Length: 187
Image (cartoon, rainbow, N blue to C red; front, side):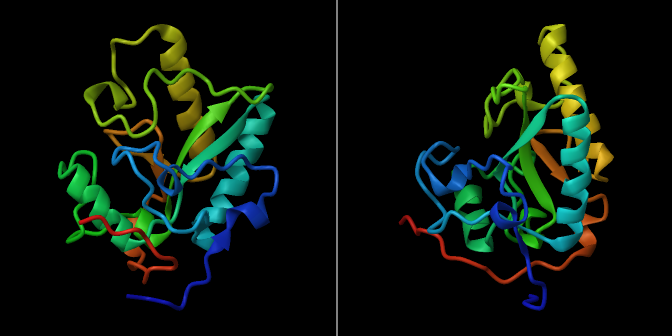
């Protein structure tokens, strides 16, 4: 594990960026808070990409909202306990790209700050959360495609099972990081 990377605090680096850390509250797949601290961190490489994503969103009259970024490995273990399905949650043996600091969970907001309709909520671990789920109306399809385009502008790529998850294309090349903040433990 590596401690030699200083992660970027997104609230400091992007003071106008809406951040709603889902794992600092109970509105997530576990139904309870996981993070002891409400800190939204990202690897400097991913933060540079996020700068380009924010510009692309702004050019379209939109903005991004962040649900999660860097995730302590202890939190990943709690998520795995809640949803031990590798299609949606990475096992702790593999290690999440969030725990490398190079993955981010986001949605798009319109000019008034309202979230665009993505068809499902964050952390809905089902087939309907897959980015290219065919049974949604064209408006939802457009919103998901637009989110993909905004994130691609910053060099991020999505995954097959969650419309909100984006990571650097070489995410696996980054080392897993030692936990930067504590998590609640539930026995």
